[in-house]
Each structure stands twice: as C-alpha cells, then as structure tokens.
Image 1 (spheres, rainbow, N blue to C red):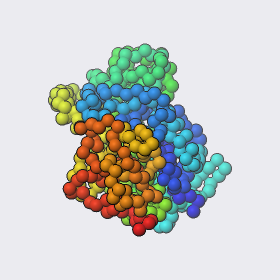
Image 2 (image 1 turned 60 degrees about the horizontal axis):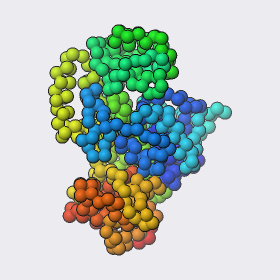
Image 3 (image 1 turned 135 degrees about the vertical axis):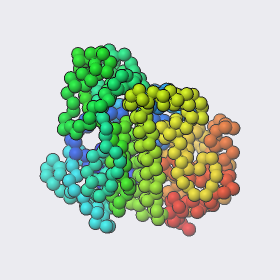
Image 4 (image 1 turned 60 degrees about the vertical axis):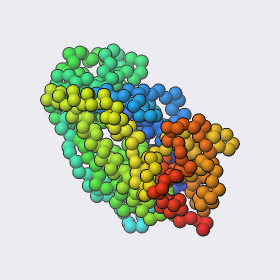
Length: 492
C-alpha cells in the first residue's frame, strides 16, 4: 500500500478529515487538483457546534479573537439563539479561506501528505484496496490505499466514478454571490425580500461588502466561468433601484438551489463526506459546518479501521449516523428557501412563521436544527438526557489542575470522565487504555441545571458525542459499550 487513506479534495471537509485521520494514527495523502487555494470564501464563519469541534482539537485559538452573536435567522426571519443554553449564531466574519488555511496548517503539522496540483482521474475498488489514477504536474501515476474518501465538492468525480446515486431536485433559479469594494451599500444582514427577489448585503471588511442577489425567474445556467460583474450589478439595480456598477469586485460567483444527497455515504472501500455527499441552498451557512462534522464523525472510525481495532459495524455507523443529518439539512434549507426566495404568495406563511418563532419552544427547535446542537446518535439502550448528544464544554477540576471537556478530547481519543472517584469504573475501562483516557474530575462550578448535574460518569467518543452515562437504570454495562465503540480489549 502507498498509504492507508486517500482523501480527494482539500476543502474544509478534506482537510479536517486528514487531520482527524492523522490524529488517530492513520497514514493519509490528500489529492487536490488546484495548485493553490482560490482565496474565495463562500462561507463566512462557522456555527456553534463547529466551534465546539475545533475547540475539541485545540484549533480554536488559531483563529484569534472569535466574535459571536446570539441573533440569527431562519429563512430571513429573525431568530433568537439565546433561547438555547450555550447556543449562538456562530463565529462571525471568519472567511472560509481563513478556515481552510488553519485546517491545512494543522493537517500538515499532523503529518498528512497534501499534494496540490494532483487530480484524481479514475479509481478502482479492488475489494481489499482502492487504486487511484492521478494526474500530477509531472505526469500520471497510481496510488493504492485501504480506503478512499471523496471530499471533492458538489460535482464530485469520486461520487461518479464509484457509482453512488445522487437523487434529488435540480436548481430552479440562479443566484449571485460577490465581495465588492467601494459601494457603500446599506446593510441587509439577513436578506431582504423585495419585489422580484431577495438581496443581502453585509460588511465583511473596511469598505468591502458581501452581497447575494436572487432575482426570481432567472433560469439556472451551467457556467464555465464566473458571471461578469456587470451582470451582477444589473440584477442588483433591477431589484433595489441602486447602482453598484462603480464598485470593484474582489470575486464573483453564481450558484443555484439544487438539492441532492448521495444514496449512501459508503460503497465498499470508497466513502463520501461534505458537499460530495450533499448539496443544498446555502441558507444559514450550514454547508461547511455539516461537512466538517461529517469528517469528525468519520475520521476516528476510519483511523480505527486502519489501526485494526475497529469493532464490526463501526465504519458503517458513519452512514447510519450522518445520512439522516444530511437529509435533515436538505429539509431545513429547502424550507428556508421557500420562505425568503419566493414571492408575495408566501407572505402569509412568512407572517405565520414569524408569529410562531416568537414562542421559545419553536425558537429552540429551530436553533437546535440549524446549529447542529440537537444532533443525537443512537447509542443503544439508555435514557440519560446526555446519551447520544454532544458533550458541551465544561470546566473541570482534575489533577494537576483545571481543564475542560474540550481539552480532554485534544488527542482524538475517547474519554471516560469519572466524576465520583469510582475505582471499579476505572478498573472496568483499563483494558481499553490504549484507546480511551480515564479522567477523574469534578465540575469547577457545579451547576444544578448543567449537563453534568447528577452524573457519576460519562463516556465520550472521540467526536464529542456521549456513548454512555451513569446513573441510568436502562443503560448497558460499560464493557459492552466499550466493545461496541472501541473494539475488543487488547488486555483481557
């Protein structure tokens, strides 16, 4: 084998996956057809759950000061994120280019081999390995690996070459996205419905605005080049009456509202993550965040396969857990598109939705949906409130001093958090000590309403989701759960 895993695509999903695989000890080569990053940033910032994920790997400080807001939207209607404890709309004004740079630096530091200017031209699943055909700057060559993961975007070559189905709906309209300098546009932070369409404008730097233009009835086109600036400025003027032709575009692109999802996230030794697995209207900036979280769910499982300790079915749980998340993402982005991209016929629905969103229960439901904080995986028997959910970051007191639940996950291993000093619990987990850490600690500031209130112990997977918690009268015994997620113990 040339390597254990080939990752195709050096966007956020591919780079996050590469770092996760290396953190788990797997050898990885990343193939990226572009010789250099484009510098374009379709995404601006990331959600609360993605901030947690980055924090769990020690990456958050690399972004510097992170500004958040508890005000967001759903389909262009204001949404108060503060109704959910610890939730917010996410990190603001961090360009996707910056996110990719941070992830590439991290992946390279962990030892991932990142090959820019190397394009996948074909692949063959050999049953016991995958062979990739690659065209590089010096000609063609072949690579062989145990697994190959397509993180190569909405027009994924991996998806097509491996025969994945990609059902869904084609785009019905074309929209424009641009960063423009020198226009002085009035802010329209969450999108403004206007006769004929929708426009959005938000300042992202001094004298630079990010604009989105959706003119209803504009047929989608498959463009070989970005649209000319005049076409974008003309559409803006038709919708708003304002001329921005004098502005200087930093970059311009077009996109549509196509909605599709791969029928499977794994086919033999080939897997998909990120936009290769799902495309949708970019409503609420959820796309990059779901892609990063795909990679965090997959990375430790694929690394376990490479290391030889993965229990049966662990890698298949990637599809089982993430495919429903992708399906729900497509549902909520389509719903948002109906709210803010349609005409006056949807005005009554927007009015009713606005009234409903004033109720805390409705707002909590929508915040959980678009933030990723509500995701709960099936962990088997048990009724503990934390079971299957992500472990919120909590300050802890442990030897030799203070720590947090996020810091305990920096190594990409599972963590058994013992909150009572139970020696029997530590003895039960000791045979898996090469795969999980056992930490005896207590909350730094006990909170009767906090997630650890009343808990004796919590087992957290490497992706931050709770696999077992005590006390829970319906739970499985700890060794059974450890075998399910971390395989047979090396030491009986």
